[in-house]
Length: 138
Image (tube, one colour):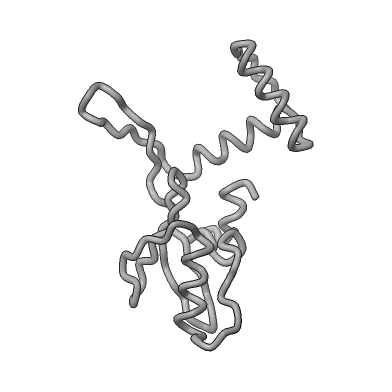
């Protein structure tokens, strides 16, 4: 694997080593996870009008298939929210991928005992078909 020499402040190096130790990963793996999560959606800069700019990412198209029904949505990595774009939700925003998954389950199977589902497992990235959890590093 090629090396990339980078200069980091000592405080950042200490945090990187701590994160690696706590997660059981190498420092390089921690950096790879961070780069992957940042590049999951295209990075733009949102201008707040007061000279501050904040990085934002475009939504990641996702889908789920439940009870033979395909449901489309958009995952917003910067907030962790998920917007279901398919009817009957048509733009409804959920605070998490899991709460959006529960809404889909309840819609297509209203009498289900528990509608709770892991959003990381339930939703898939459009095009790639990989689980949302892979995008989120879980």
